[in-house]
Image (cartoon, rainbow, N blue to C red):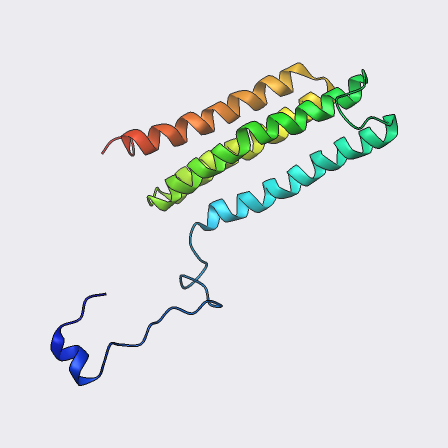
Length: 156
């Protein structure tokens, strides 16, 4: 903040409006779509992680997959989720921050969420078409978000 000398002499600087316990913005907050989808994907990650933990307990394996195919699938489902989800959410947050239309943000976000769910389900169940569709949707979300961030909205 910059103050003129007369402002400082008369009343001193105006009071700070920052309060550490209050929201940074009014209303629903910033990035409401990304926040909601991040919450959903947090629950999915905990579920995938719990499946790995249960599998490790069941097989007595503390590292690796111990040659157990079901545990290997669980580990890879969780690992793939972790590989793609953070960047997808970060890109989505930037798209929403740049004030893309809500339908654009929702479309990209739903492609990411559905893609991650389908891929995990396909990985866990050994259903290759679900895995493939999940990756296509994930890639579509990443490419759509990346394209929006690099080139801006189509038609402008």
